[in-house]
Amino acid sequence: MRTGAGGASDVGRVRNANQDSWLITDRLWAVADGMGGHQGGEVASQVTIEVLADRFDEFTADALVAAAQAANSAVHERASEHAELRGMGTTLCAMALVDTDDDARTFCVINIGDSRCYRWRDGLMTQITRDHSLVEDMRAAGQITEAEAAVHPHRNIVTRALGIQPDVKVDAFDVVPVAGDRYVLCSDGLFNEVSADRIGATLRRLEDPRDAASELVRQANEAGGRDNVTCVVVDVIDATGAVSVADAPVDSSDRPPDLAGITTALAVDEGPIESSDRSERSGKRRRAVDPDPADRPTVRLRRATWRTAGFVVLLAAVLGVAVAAVGWYARGSYFVGVDGDQVTVFKGRPGSVLWFDPTVEARTGITLEQVPATLRDAVVSGKQQSSRADADAYVARMRTVICTDLENGAKPATTVAGAPTSTLPSSCADGSGPSKGSTAPTSGVTGSKVPTTKRPSTTVRHTGTR
Ligand code: MN
Image (cartoon, rainbow, N blue to C red; front, side, top):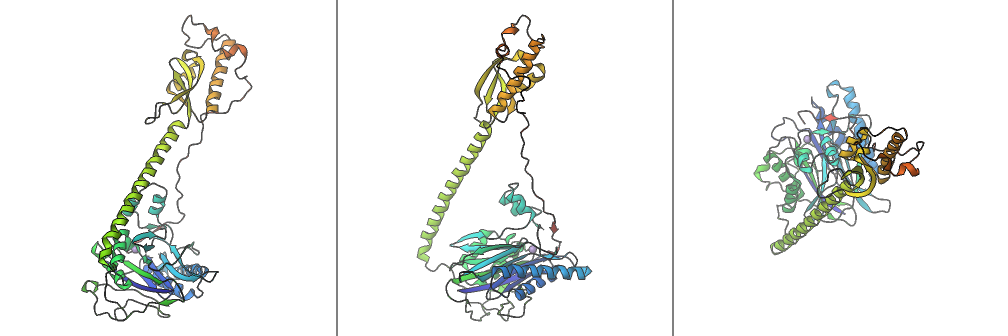
């Protein structure tokens, strides 16, 4: 199993301090985005990286999660000891190569907050982690689209961070390493400025992970650099055999001049750790990823064709589901209304929904003028029922009221003079109507589901210096 990695970080173009920290060792890679004034952000992210590296001493997923929790405790304790650091916290997105029970190796990715891990495979980007942020919650609940989330003014509000509480919940994902895969761990300063597609295009173009990381940071700055920006690129060079790190010939002389402003923060000083300090920085000559220019058009065309086909299929599926949903809504209930002058049970919704018109389910033999005055408005506009049984029960109760009134000699309030009240409704005489004692199921009160968004108990607002 051979991996290669490169990282880069920069303060950006607006902030005056870099609160991000990052880590590269032979089996552990991490990005932390600190928050909190008075250097709290820097301290939180650095302490986290230090403790994570120190405590990840067994190569297991459990050890990685435990190390993150130890980092949480360390940051939380430090904050409670120093008034000026109170409230500091940090995101943490880390990936480790861990041993599984069956002697295999896999990646374990953990996440707290809104730093991300993406996987680039065969030219496609997949986001491995899920942000713990208000905007991601809204997107997941369907309240906003992905495009709206990407530009939402509150996208800096995280719902989980390391160091804020005595304990923290850590999301963990197993990811099987496949040769050729590239992973990007990054702070929001990257993905808020550079789209995932563009990150993917850069990974395609720049084979060396150090070059790719530096170029991504440069692109974030070029796009505005409104936040600290950090990324670590991890390559799976060979997915078999013992763990080793890619050989990296040291040669920093060919760095492009546009990377001159990039500085890095690295807080760990032991272990086989690569920092991107300029003197240590190694870089192979930049090479284009596409090895054979002749292959490229074919590959791209095939990909585009599959994408188009996939999109069409997806669109058709979405439309189909939408039509079915409207139909289900339109057809999925009953109501008691009036057809001509006769009270009638309909299937559908009062009025009509799109092209789904209500259909007649049963005629009741009750004319509108026999309907008790108190029910008449509801029936004229269509009294909705959640089921056919409810609709029948509603009609039955109406019939009972009419029959009772007839027995008591009272005429329906607005009976037209001379109308033969004794002929209707027919069920009064034969007793087929419901008896007074029978309790028809209550209708009309069907629970309506109001979408509720579970609000996080603790909401951490990134400070202005994040
Ligand atoms: Mn940030």
